Image (cartoon, rainbow, N blue to C red):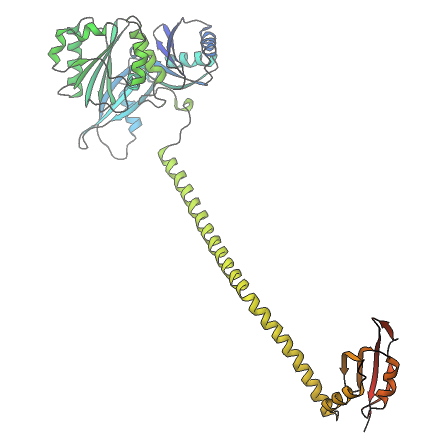
Amino acid sequence: MRARAGLLVDEGRLTLAFVSAQGELECLALEPGDDVGTRLAAELDARGYKRRRVRIGLDRSLVVVKVLELPRAEGGSLGEMVRFEMERHVPFAAEDMASDWSLNTGKADGPLRVLVGACEARTVDQALRILGQAQRRPLAMSVACHDLRALLPAKVGARRSVWAHRHDGRTDLLFLARGLVRLSRVVPVETPQELVREIRRTLSLLQWRDGGELWISGDQAEAVIEAPELAELGIPAMQPPYSADMQAIADTMSEEQRGAGILGLAVAVGSSRPRINILPRALRPRRTSPGQLVTVGMACLMALLGLGFFGAQAYQRDRYVQRISQDIRQLDPEAKAVQRLASEVAQKKKLVSTLQSLEAGGLHILPFLRDLTELLPQDAWLQALNMDGQGVEMIGQAGGASQLIPTLDASPWLQRVQFTSPVTKGQGKEQFRLRASWERR
C-alpha cells in the first residue's frame, strides 16, 4: 500500500496520523501554535512522505450534520434550496459557514432526503493555513467519523448497521445503509443505557425499524460489547468487520490508543471524494466528471474507428497492388516471349518488304543470291549483306580480299565494285567491306 497521511482537527488539538507503506500507524499530537505548520512539515519529511496532498478530518463535534427533507420541485436549484434550509439549522451566520451536501436514496414518490454537513469557515481556514505553512495542499476535508467507512471492505454484509466509536470521553454514532453513511451524531454518553437511548432516538429519526448490526470500537470497546443492556436493542453487538489490512493495523494498537488511533487511521486512509467534503471546490483536486469521461471515450472511439477505416483502406489497396504485381510477375515471361516474337515478325516483315520493293524495281534477289554463292571463293564468307535500290554492301572475310573485286565485277548483276574501308587481317583472314552498284539492264 502507499503511504498515507491525515490531519485530525479537534477543538484545540491537532493529531497527525501517518500510515507507512509497510502498514504501520503513527499518531502524533501537534500543539496549536505559530509554528505548528513547520512542525507538521518536519514530521512528514522525517517519515519520507513525498506526496503534496494531505487529507483533513474534522472531529464530529466541530461539524453540524443533518438530514433534511425537501419537496421534489421541477426546475428549482437543489443547491440553493439546501443552502436556504441549512441556514435554519446551524448556530452561526450563513456568511461564516462552509458546507457540503449529498442525496440519500429514498422512495421515488417521497420527499428528497439530503445529508448535509456544515462548520464555521474559520475552522476550515485554520486547517488550510496550517497545511500552507507545511507547504502541502489539502486532498479532502471530511467529517472524521464518516471516514470510518474506509476501514471496512468494499462490500459490507449488513444491510443496515450502527457504528459507535468511543474516544476522548464521547461517542460518535455512525449510521450506515448498504455501506453508505446516512447520518452521524456525537453524544456524551457514559453508560450502556445512555448509548441504547441515543441509538433508539436516531433510529426513529431515520425511520428505521431496526439497526441491523451494532458495531462498537474505540476506548473500552470490549466492556461495552459485553454489557447486557445492549440486548434491549434486539440487534447483535460486535466489533466492526474491518478489512484485512485495517484489521492488521488495528491489532497493533494498545487499548489506550484505539479511540484516537482508529479515528486518525480512518482520516488518513479515507476517500479523496467523501460524501461530505467541506473543502472549497476551488481547492479540490481536479477530477474528470463522468460526462467528460464519456466524451473522451467517444472521441477516442471515433479516432480509433477513423484510423481503422483508413487502415483498412490502405490494407486493401496494398493487397490489390500486391495481387496486381504478382499477376504481372507471372505474365512477365509470356510478355517477353510475345515481345521477342513481335520483334522477329517485324524484322521478317521488313525483310519481306525490302525483297518485295527490290523485285518491284526489277531486281530478282533470289537469283542474285544463288549466283553470288557460286561467284564467291570457297575461302570467303559473308558476315553481313545489305541491299537497297542503289546497290549492295558486303562485309566478310576471305583469303584474298583483293581477288573479290574482279570476280564480282564479272557478275552480270554488279558494277563499280570497290572497298569502302581498308582491308585488315586477323586470324589468317582478310577482313573486307565493299560496295557495288546494280548493273542497269
